[in-house]
Image (cartoon, rainbow, N blue to C red; front, side):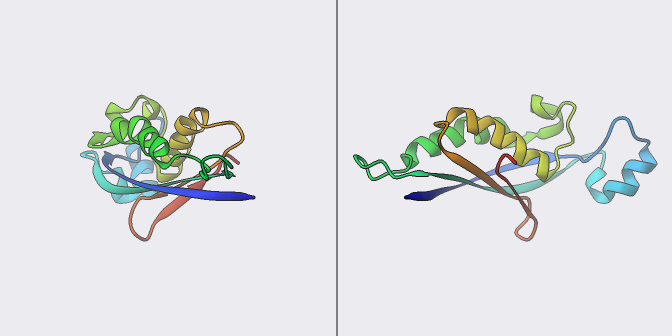
Length: 136
């Protein structure tokens, strides 16, 4: 029997949606206000969902403290109160859209989990705008 465990987390970060290989006019046309040269910030809400079999000894799919600590180390410590474009190496040459941030978070967490676990990342950029990624 498979069960999904969810852990919520939060981080604040600034970013600018911008492609270095595009003109200023094209960046403005495509990204609008999100292309502000002085950056802008979001209060990101993250939900990491781990699906797996219940361990008959513990009754857990995954110890939620293990998941909490992993998210803190790999995501919160790395992204919180950072300028994603300037301070997070993964975005040096990758536009920090919500989609790309979700994929990066997945790629940081998945290798640290047991291979049999399924992982889905849900990332809210605003209360009404969010993305999900599960490795597909």
